Amino acid sequence: MNFTLAFKTVAVMLLCAVPGFILIKSRVIGEKFISAFAKLLLYVCQPCLVVDSMTGVDFSSSVATGLAVVFAVVLLSELVTSGILFLLLKNKQTDVRYRIMTIASCMGNVSFMGIPVIRALIPGNPAAVAYTAAASFALNVYGWTVASAIISRNKKYISAKKIFLNPATVAVAVSIPFFVTNTDVPGALGDMVSLIGHFATPLCMIVMGARLATSSAKEIFLTPRNYVAVAIKQIAYPLVMLGIVTLLPLDVDMKRALYIMACCPVASMVLNFSELVGEGTRPAASVLLLGTSLSSITLPLMVLLI
Image 1 (tube, rainbow, N blue to C red):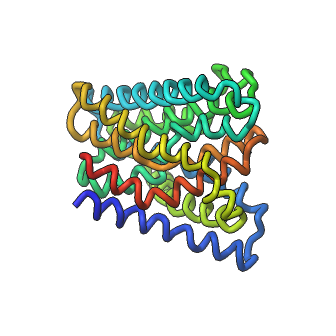
Image 2: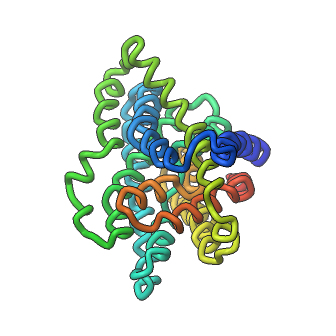
């Protein structure tokens, strides 16, 4: 049952990539627009998705604690995973391809792909969906600081400014008053936030399809390094997360949500941050596209374990 639901959900999302592929190949839109759409995702759609996820659940101390736990577990797992790989590949960190591999090993598409899968596998539980907001927050904190520093080899990104002044942090700050008071975002503004948030997943997939149309199939599918990164992110990383959540005294749905998010493929933010710092865009695009393509196999198989 889990396999069928997960496969169907991922398949529908991957089909959303087809229009992006066709638009580029038919030259209806140019390659220069892809980066603009990616920034729309990063600066508009994802923050709206965070707000919509957090305001869609009733506040309670247990939910608040759960959000904090998810944030801490996800951020710590990202830091430890990339730290281990950074040390293992220390002599190769001068090559941006291995720096991309280092961050791709732990950055997952926890919101754009995680939310639809969680809604399918943990139905009727808005708290489980809200956990994706905490995971996305952790991913963004890691991305704007550590991941950017690894890609660029510049420690200037490790700063309080980068932690507190990024779209995800602002979205969480906006969400908290509504969350703790069990208040919806008012009127048409709330409808707009929800509408844009729900558009995030299809737009992410459309951007993926467009990038696939501009990428080299050989570079994506015939680069062994890409398969190593995807295997770590989409097989080894979830298995470690499964071991961690098994040991932690968490409720069943929180454990399942954490594990499902760990199973999500390489995050589109790997490429977004490489574009923002101006390094490693080609290897980032290739590992991202391979991970997303293989997620139709890896994600349904991995969720059989829960």
